[in-house]
Amino acid sequence: MNRFQKVVVLFALSMFLVFVPLGRDEVKAWNPIAHWQIAAKAAQDLGLDGDFPDYANVPDYWPSDIGFYQINPFFCWSHAVIDRNNGASPGRISPLYPDDGRYPEFDMWYLAKYKMKTAFTSEMQKTILGYACHNAADRIVHWTYFTGGLPGEGPIDTYLAWRTGHADKETWADYVVFQQIVVPVGWPVWNPDGTPVLQMVINCKADPSILQLAQKIYVKNGRKCNSNGTGTITAENNATITGHVSTFNTQWANPAVRSLNRDTWGGYQLEAIAQGWTQSACLVKYNTSVTLAESWINSVRSLAK
Image (cartoon, rainbow, N blue to C red):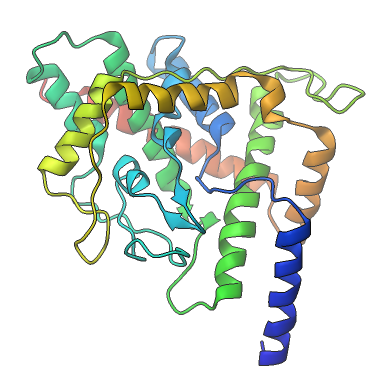
């Protein structure tokens, strides 16, 4: 792309941002419907409690980014990644998995079971296993299927990677999972007015004490958010964590808030066709995520037996 073309594209993008409201202002990986359904399948296969899917979105209770794609330190903690942008905004480059033992769910399970003075409650267990389910599923798609910025890319390519290849694609994928997996076979998907026939309710739950412990462990172990060895989090109190859970629950427990709509789906599907995204490939990623989620849940439950 030559300089003139870049100027034209940047101008077009600026006009788009001014006049067209974006559907979402942050990026995750799998969205809440997909995470809920992955957990529902795991619960069915592994004999977990029926409300286990309500704990599947725990790591996303904290916003993934702050500012213009600036990676939230709490995202680094909850998803066990490091920020290659070192806290800069815009966060052009996608985070990395250091694979250095920082996944919160494994520490939480051991400490809750053997070190805490309070009882290891069912809610604690489901919170921890919800973490394992969520992070395993995300590991399949971060940042390859749902893309992110790469070193050496210019601002336009980076923006498109985050905006189109990540934020838009994950919303499209949530529609795919809803229609192909959540809605029972033979059911109609949409009402005549374009609203979904199945009014899916996603409740969001977590035990705040075990999440606070996870944050304290992160800090105590000297974990850093940034690839240059700087940055960390400040452990929150139970009331603050409960507030995060409540906010996320408000956003997703009410079907009207999610605004699933046939016409919106049509727009995302047109984008999918233009980008070469296929529903079959999406469902392969979904099934692979289920398999890894079940494996991680079993790995966590087997600790220190």
